Length: 204
Image (cartoon, rainbow, N blue to C red; front, side):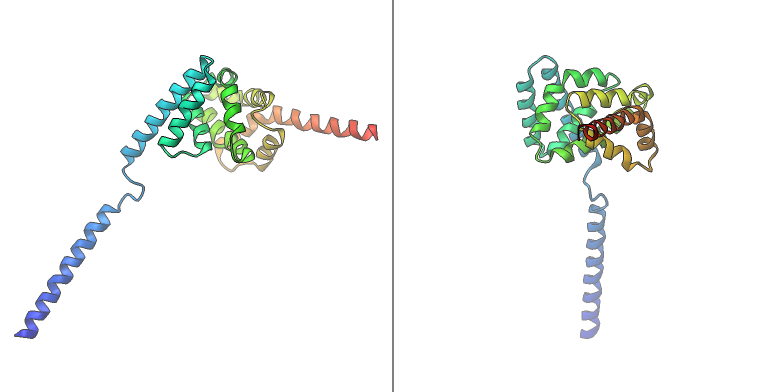
């Protein structure tokens, strides 16, 4: 009798253990947390960044920087995250004009970057890539060369960064389309480099 009782108790404990384990698995179905919560946080950050950019557009660059730093600390963002949210929340099909409007803000953020080369690459992809590749922005995608030239002229993008990004290529449809649209400007950069090299040879 005693052996039967112990066996029954053991079986009951194992069933409870299995039930608890199943419940634990249910809790871990979404390892990245509640998707609605994450989306709500993104919208909140986007709204804060947009408000900061409104200060920038009004000429209050220092005020915009302070507002962005509050968002940066409150949400635990990286430096490049801020750049990403600016391009996502404050820029649209009028991006060429908007880059000129916010160039002082962008310049300060890039100067403060702990890794300027990495931030330059991040601007090209995903920032600009997502901007020109968004739904309904076919006209802006075609103006990729103009956008890159404006950012180059404003010292927001370096020649080396642009050429390396272009030459690296992409297997993705958007990456290919953006490079195709950027080709006239990149070719101009490369030709200018070749002309400079020839002039240097002549001087020698």
